[in-house]
Amino acid sequence: MLSEQEIEVMLNGVDYECEPGTAGDIHALVEEHAELAAEVGRLKGERDRLQAENAELLAKLERSNPMPVKRERTLFGDHVCPNCDAAFIGIVKVNGKLRNTTPYCGNCGQRIDWGEDA
Image 1 (cartoon, rainbow, N blue to C red):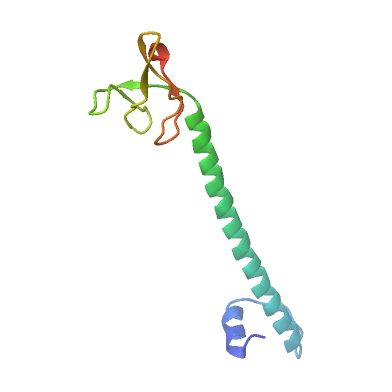
Image 2 (cartoon, one colour):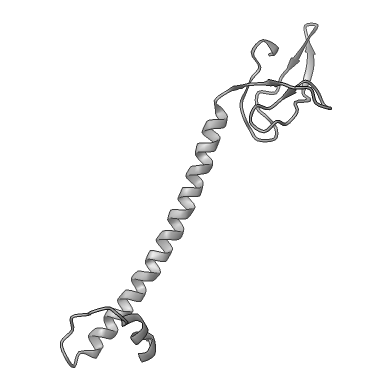
């Protein structure tokens, strides 16, 4: 049960329509208000969690669309991720030609379109 002081603070500026002599009704309204405020807080937390999950899923979806590899000389090779600029070192020799067998960036997960380099 809330103290009289807590009730005063919560009712400050709020006009509840209660008949005189129904202090219990005011206490019930304040308790209901506190319960609703707690539920609103819980729902806001759930909304924030879902928004973060949605942003993560959208980022994964964007990274699933292949982007052409960037040709850029680094200490580790000549190809870097178009999303995060991580160098690709998974180059192997297949049928006498150098090929990269990495379909995704190991750093950020971006799907890679190797074009003619594939």
